[in-house]
Length: 118
Image (cartoon, helix red, strand yellow):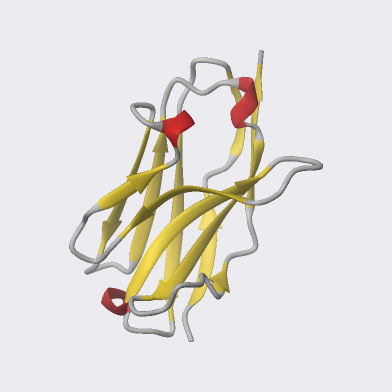
């Protein structure tokens, strides 16, 4: 069972950048699809981006061209580089993992707050 710990959130002005990091431990990292999700107040938790072990990625439409997900399989790390941030990107961001042949993300970090001021 993999454990996940996020870091890197904070307060940034619109147009700025942040880089989130997620450290994974307790599992075989290459066996997991990794993802970033976010949840704004009063809204459901939505997928932001996912990445498989080989590096193929998938993004939610509103972040395409602004956010980049990456992973370092040697260090058991996954990152989310967020550029051109907008106030509507404000949310708690969660790192998540699912086993390659599973359909559900069952392992979650504690979340990190990202606040974008206008």
